[in-house]
Amino acid sequence: MRNFDQNSITQAVLERVAAAPDTRTRQISEALVRHLHDFVREIRPTQEEWAKGIAFLTDTGQMCTGARQEFILLSDTLGVSMLVDAINHDHQGAVTESTVLGPFYVEGPPEAALGSDISGDLPGEPMYVSGSVAAADGSPLAGAIVDVWHSDEDGYYDVQHSEDAADLVARARFRTDVQGRFHFWSIKPAAYPIPHDGPVGKMLEAQGRHPWRPAHVHFMIAAPGHEKLVTHVFVAGDQYLDSDAVFGVKDSLISDFTEQPAGTAPDGRTLDRPWCRLTYDFKLNPASEAAHRAA
Ligand code: BEZ
Ligand code: FE
Figure 1 (tube, rainbow, N blue to C red):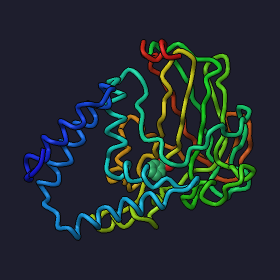
Figure 2: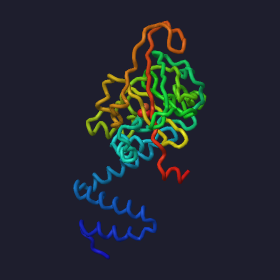
Figure 3: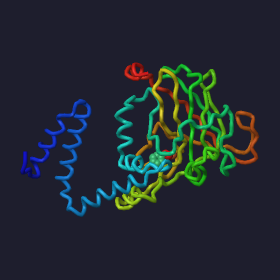
Figure 4: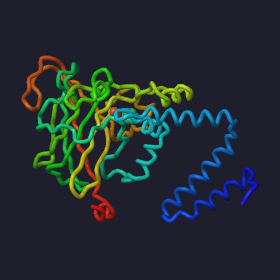
């Protein structure tokens, strides 16, 4: 086959990838070729524009390190991470909704006892977080793993300051008690711009967009026989709830972080200054049949 024009080239590539031995690889390759060729036919790039596009992807890859994943930021800011999330979590109300993982999760976070203060020496308004983890029918899940991480009062995560595991702060792993409950202390997180000193930041600027995310606390919750939940709880009233740079906000995940006067907290701690309180109850979806088989 030779002499392809701007339409026949698509069919030629489709016929070539049809030889893929794995049917899923074939399906994905065919869709990629169809959509990519249609995209190029629609935008009709000049040679210089196409070279710029390739340079952008090259810069995105070269920006990636152990501590910086620019391709995740690209996926997030183009709404693809939330699209994949929506396709895979269509639970319609019975269980807690999910949202983006983001690039700041650390595998195997430090274990902490219920009631601990995970804020280290960080300055900020004290925040008391309590809640529960239950199955979809409301039955409590004892021993569920609750991973928590959030920004400091300036909007930075620990891993943006240091790659040293000893410096991890405002993140921890808790296990729910026999009633499926958890509680801990930290400081109230702030809204923050996603890292925007790389190609994704340039893209946002070129698209006339800001890089900000509304303030939130991340949760990753796991319990045997249930789907792992990756979500956040957002601070009600935040100015970026309707323009999150990564499209992650859902109404059900917005909560009042209620302001409390100085005094005695529910766990008996006495505070000499105002603090805030977040209470959130999570419900997990049962693991799918496929996940059970794979386990
Ligand atoms: C985050 O919430 O940590 C996050 C999510 C997406 C991109 C950047 C940060
Ligand atoms: Fe975050």
